[in-house]
Image (cartoon, rainbow over all chains, first blue to last red; front, side, top):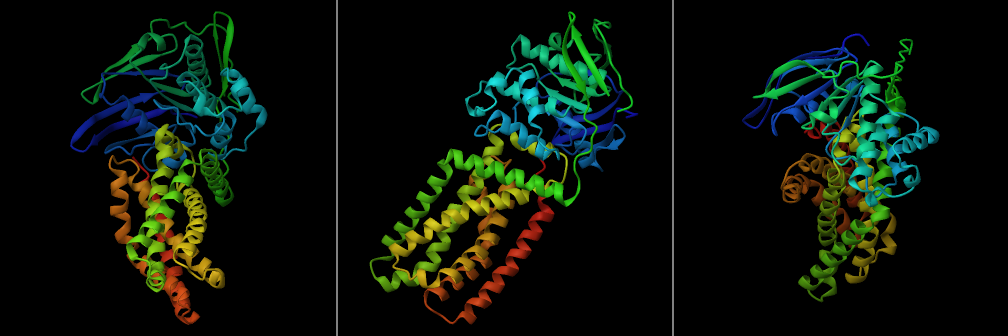
Length: 234
Length: 251
């Protein structure tokens, strides 16, 4: 993976209202970007465009060299998202949700990997329970387990700290930093800047449909404590 | 590539970005289709609420029509074809709406369209699941209709099954497509029949005529003509819906 995320003149409107009016950004691999802005400023819209859930009204971009607009199917192979809603099925068990997710992603479900992911998010004992009985925080943990099974090169997090306890927030930040250190890119749309600050590289603020504040560095540049592995051969 | 994140000396996460390519080609798409069929039918089997309510509604509609038409056995038999297919239509609309509602409830529709691969697999999976569901409802519906309208179903079971199957395939093909189109709209429950029913008129006429011909003991030649027409509708509806699905499922 050479280039990261490159957005050129991204604009989007819902009806007559332009939410994004021209977003330009170049984000290098290995960065965690906090997207901030008021309610309705277009943070989620930008995430959805980067994930190919929305086609931009104008502009284009590339994700690790792949065109967002012309090759959305290929972009989706690189993207993972933790959205407002966990996107789980209540009448399936936690394990079944993960198996379904892997099948839809074109992978063969691996029972050991699924058990490992559930253990990592603290849901091992609930593996055979239906998700309809889960709390909001447990659902978010299961959604995180889904990402752990297929760590994406471009991770899109929309208000990721909602419903999580302290351990859950550490899990999200641990995963976020892990993706970045592995050469991926993480976009975190949030109102809760202090939570993401320990792992973020830059804050990009959206106002009036454009970035108004770019390149603000994190307050703790040496926040990565401990070992960093990079195996470029994979 | 892999990376580790440590906080206060404790390893919290060890991540390797998944750079393996997903399975490609028709086998991979059929695997996705099978996953959706399994998921939809498993959820339906566990919830049961949808099947029970749709089957009950179908029986109720048949009963109400029987009361409205009156006690004359000959009149009831003459009207039976039309009543059966209108009941199928009303019952089907309920189940199509439900098929996408369960995706919208937990934000699953976004996740579904975010998976790599051909999005048309979602349509085909939902089509097969809806078809299975509606065919099961129709078994109950036909038994109830046989009793209420005094229909000689046993003697025509095989050709009638074929007519019902062909009519249902076309109906479900369009219903699944329009339900996807209406799924992100606020007034989807109202919009779906408004969009769907006008498109179904040719299919409805062919299905009703074929059913009436069978019930009245008409020559198989007439029924065969209607069945060929139904087959043509099925091919057109399925092909057009598969080709256009990618555009309607986008937000």
